[in-house]
Amino acid sequence: MATLVSGNPGSGKSTLTALLRSRGVRALDADEVPGLAAWTNSSGDVVGDGSLEPTPELLETCSWGWNGPRVEQVVDELGEDGVLLGIAVNQWDFVDLFDGLVLLELDASTQRDRVASRDPLFREQIAAGLPVMQAQMLAHGAQVIDATRDLEHVARELVTLLHSGR
Image (tube, rainbow, N blue to C red; front, top):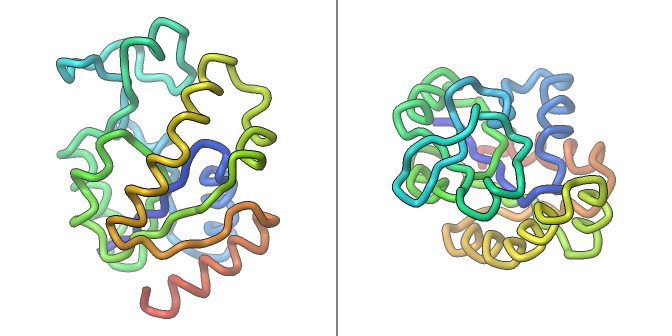
């Protein structure tokens, strides 16, 4: 099965996807996989056009979640050595589909610097979610990589971890 690499916004998931690919790793950025994620309301209905850039209204009433059947399909397509990098409010429903779980750990200061250009309301939600998400990842047995460092270094450490058999 594949490995799930997750971290809060600003942890470097999108950049790491490109760095892993350049090193020959089969890696997918969950935000770029068609049909994998969407904004959903409290009833679970998809709202909006599926784009990642949220409006203030979307942020107040919706959450970013993964589509179960599509997650299963992506994991199958990735195969044993593949890596999915992403975050969703319901990712905990799918951790058993993955062989490995890796947390890109981040402190509040680094996160604040990295997401400074995003919408202020989005930044507030991002900051509030940091301790919760990281605690949940640790509770699920994730291996931890310090994502506050240079992302080239983080990519090397992640590749080493992936090749060590997780």
